[in-house]
Length: 296
Image (cartoon, rainbow, N blue to C red):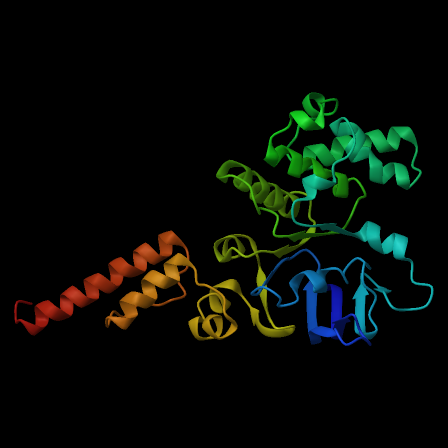
């Protein structure tokens, strides 16, 4: 069942001025409840603009966006409820931390909902556990004393404390060291698998997209260029080249072997699958060469 439906969505910045720039052109897509959907595309493809429609930061003027039964452009649409349903985490969310301690910062959203103090505290503790931070350890810790990865997880916890059904991550690992990057990716996996959240994952890393998502949408200059399973989409080198995206390293290796006459399947995208595919292709190639020499 679809939790987000986008129909014929268009968006123009500075509309009606000489500087008008159209960045979305009739976009159609769905997000299925419980899935992890990846959105990829080159710079200025419309990714960040699109996701701002999912929690009502933008309201459609042309087209339609329906989120968990709420038509976002309808008169009287409950935008407060919408923004509790969809949590949006932009790049570098830790820059939005502004309170002294972790508990105080994560409390901000629930306090704005005017919830009872006991419920606020419980939501904060639950959100910290969801991002892998022990509330007994981190609740009263000063924000400035945290690592970069911990700050980012605290920022994510602040969104989770609102109790969303959908979490949207816009390039969530940007600027992190390898350890912090791994922690954030593991957090996203946990939110989906253990806490049953629908996840929308916008990223420039094709490797991360392949690892995490169930389906992937490719945007190209504000239009949907491809939709499908990661194995099929991310091995379509002609489409990736046309759009201007890079390729996964495994695809680069397999494609270079194919150009040299090796019979390899580019859909073997993981390192392990690619290694097995290369070994199989080598064995087939060696067998044919041996047969040609008359030694088999």
